[in-house]
Amino acid sequence: MRVDVAAVVVTYNSEDHIDALLDSIPAAAGGLSYSVVVVDNGSTDGTLERLDRRTDCTVIRSTNRGYAAGMNTAVAASPEAEAVLILNPDATLDPDCAPRMLAVLRKPGIGIVAPRVREADGSLSPTLRRGPTMARVGGLSFTGLPAFTERIEDPREYETEHEVEWAVGAILLIRRDCYRALHGLDESYFLYSEETDLSLRAKDAGWATVYTPDAGAMHIGGGSGESATTHTMKILNRVRLYRRRRGVVLASVYFVLTVLVELRRAILGHDKSWPTARALLQPSRRPPALGASRTLIPR
Image (cartoon, rainbow, N blue to C red; front, side, top):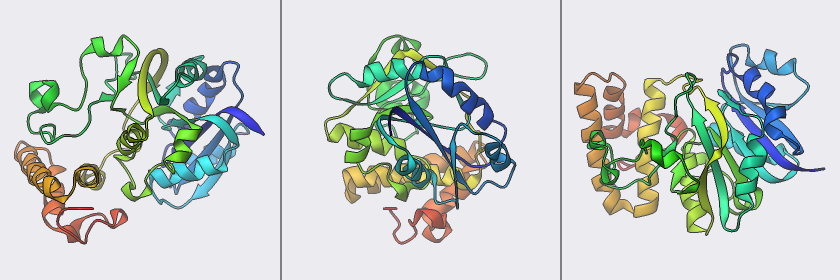
């Protein structure tokens, strides 16, 4: 069986959100044929009980091998499709979201499409991002200047369809041929930076990431929470991504700047930054799931 869109979801303690997402998919699909595969990464709350009561998705029980691994498992278990719709469990889709995104994806040279996303209160969620650079490591992001800021805050940037370097991966439609050519998400990241890496690798291979305001969705964010460990993963993976793309020499400078930024944040009262700074400087303190404890500059 072949479908137009293969929707894939990875859950982890997502009982408060997963039903709303799955309930939104039929209307979001419009007239498209679709499948839904959910991989649960070892939830310990009531997520699986909720999923077991449903008949509109295929559920795969897994241990927590990371978000990227869960997504790749879900895609592999899905039928052949023109496009893969990556969804966070704490998102919901607007009616006809999928066909509107697919219409953009079918344009030549486009590999990934991101929709307009709003917060739970209806306000714009700034999901578009600029690529990582030395100047954007974080210390000067308060200036709001594009040269120093990854996150795109200007509402005017969300009014028209255009190419972007990458977008937050809560809701992304990806051409299946693109996903396959890139061998899916890089599982070594475990959590965070995998969507950044995917869009940048897609661009390297000639596939653009495009934002469209014509398709809408809502994303609550933080559905599985953030701890000191996940914050550490996020920061370490930014350094790893930069090293993989720019090499160890430039990454060494990026690493030092990252340490200084985390120390500054810690001094200003961000309690999660202290353990992150320690993990940056002491590889043995890094989360084992990342496999990044062998060198000072994480690979």
